[in-house]
Length: 298
Image (cartoon, rainbow, N blue to C red; front, side):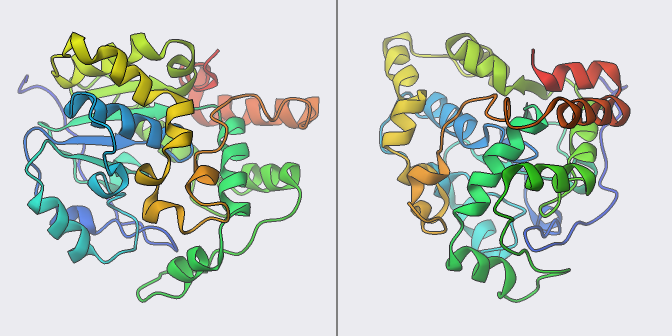
């Protein structure tokens, strides 16, 4: 890689009911590590499944959630996750929801960032939040070392939830715009791949080929149809438990609730024209025209 490349450096720590970014300071990179990143609810689990299928050549029954932990989630404790990752002998693939400036960035690792229109993100996030059970709240709010206020149950109105999320920049989870901006800013680095959820929906087969090429994985064509089957929404919905944290124990309805619908546009007909326009104006202001158009995915 060129010596002229300016690599991102860590500038801050982020702590919340979900985050403890300090774990990245202790994580020992390997040169072939894969980091899968999104703001949230943008296809993270789907891409983890895709990467697992490419690494393991279409193998069924992979415990993807255990193999590919959300590193900066505050629970379980750092030593548990780091110890498990240190023991992995296969090519590692790890999940994050942090902006770039809260990560330790490796020039040799590969980074896949998945974007999705914020309106679609919130409709998926609302399902995630409304079905969270007492165990989820206990893990995030009542375990040691939480910094900042707890997370509370959501309102019963998805449109009100969206409007508060927009007005308070990602409330009650974490800021949206800085996450998108930070990854967009490094999109031209040689080890960063920007993927859009809508493109994956439109042409899953073509996008998986691109991911394999980016990761330097030679696809066994005799396993290609099996890989595609195992990456389909129907297969993932029917076999959700291995892909979801704790097998879905944090959500009423289990893992199948976490892997919900996998579609875009559910906000259409629910947000009025003014609300939708307010989102688009905010996206343009926060991201600029190029990034805002990319994030819209149309």
